Length: 374
Ligand SMILES: *Cc1c(COP(=O)(O)O)cnc(C)c1O
Image 1 (spheres, rainbow, N blue to C red):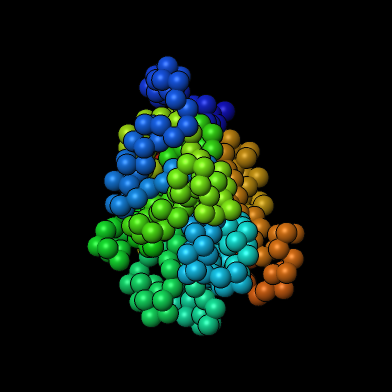
Image 2 (cartoon, protein in one colour; image 1 turned 90 degrees about the vertical axis):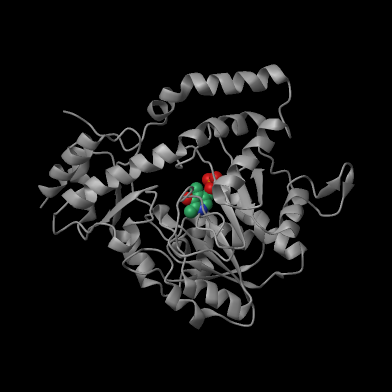
């Protein structure tokens, strides 16, 4: 039986293996492993992609998000106990960044249709202590609108993008600065290059992108032991560096990002057109135009049954995410919150294959198999 892998890091990496080995070889031969030219070049390339003035290479996506918040605290823009709006159906890292900085997450439900933060529900959750809105471009769909910009302006809130899943996505609504690419829409963005992301390193890596020079300088100091210049420490900092080898790999991968995202759009278009099973709810039409399809997520009330059906037909699948953050054991204090939309989403979502390994013919056949599910 033909099988359709959900993802194989080995197989998606092998077409680029010689380019990657060459890039790693350059780093080995240079003898320069931290804070060198590869990190600087990658930061420049990433800032260009996201249309921002600054990009800071970092250890991972969670560190990127928590450094943004930590820097706002050091700058006196946020104080411990202040509130940050966050979608109730995000990956837990968005929330961990908030609580790690001793800020309070205020969960706002997503739109049942787009599965992104429902911007029309934000204003009712704003209090005197609200300082920011963390938007998550979930599954690769930008969460952005004029209404969001207006709310942030009216209440003087920072907009922090969790861009872990949407690198290279463009919106149809302008950013505050007149640009259109995620990672440059709000005041600062956390990016992740975890190996399974659309732009994946061969290990952990992340970055902050921003147009705010003061914020960028503060993050640069905090991520380097709190040091503004050598052996002089102005913050009780951390070590969150990106290394030269991962930066060299990301420079290679970045050259392939556009074709990767274009391929994902093509596969998604085949699913959108060909999956017609009434038991399977496809992504909302609002999501289709701008999504870079980190995940292709369908929904069904019969998920257990559908998952078994996919498994028995050799179709790889995954559930992102089976439990919303407020129901995780580590967040017992939030377990009583009423967030029925996040819970309903987590009980019905399932992702089907979408990667450089999924061919157009595979997507057609997967659609046909899904249409026979009953
Ligand atoms: C992957 C991911 C993160 C965390 O990134 P890491 O690099 O794994 O730390 C944060 N938020 C979202 C939405 C993610 O998908």
